[in-house]
Image (cartoon, rainbow, N blue to C red; front, side, top):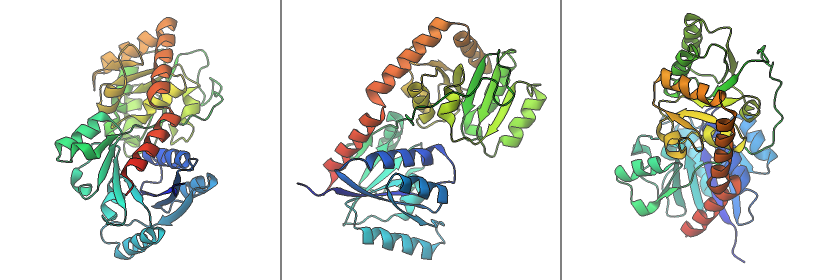
Length: 346
């Protein structure tokens, strides 16, 4: 019997974030496979270390302080080499830039967005979570046969919907949800402008980030305070999805939009803008509705179209659920990684 493939999973991520949440999901899912043996090397956020260890993932925390943190880098690289991995997979730029190439392991960089490629050129293989990101790497000079497309899967844990009147919400009004980092790229300002054309709709906006104060000010300026609930950062977005009528993804830039997979998996119809990831993943009219970026009028019309038609809503739910099961579910994605690791192992 072949020895398990020793994998080092490396993430120097933020305290909260979608990529960080998926790291825990994927590494935990891979840890269930007997073909693999893993250790996670992550920034020392106690809650993430605890989440991984609860799923029996061997985990060690590091500072990952950046270019000037020479002592921290030395400690990390020493621990990595001591683990003696067959494959090292790094997530995002800091982990990728900090991890050296080595003849002793295969280095894989995993890209979840259209990042600057200078931090990634020293790897042996690259994983892109959308076909567009893969093409971005190929256009940037990476060898096509070393670039692999493997998307994300959703948190498939069954959830119980919240009461419709949660967060002081009118129980008899249409209810929509948006979620993500409160950043300019996410286009939540466009969504707020669209809300002025949906006078009976309430919005739950889950997230935190640098645009929070600006978005709250815009909400007041547009007279939306009675119909918009800022929920802060939430770790129960799938529960929120199960509680509302529709999910809206108004992003200007979105690498994959894992939130799309979440909506499909939890049978919540989605309206999204034609940003990179959602525009690639969603078939308009089949697994969701697509509108132009930064077009508040079109976004409002699409939302009202779904809210106004039970048949369309159900059709989008069934279409999204089917697409998820056939190409994005946990078993499918975990198997793709196992096959990829098996193929590149030296």
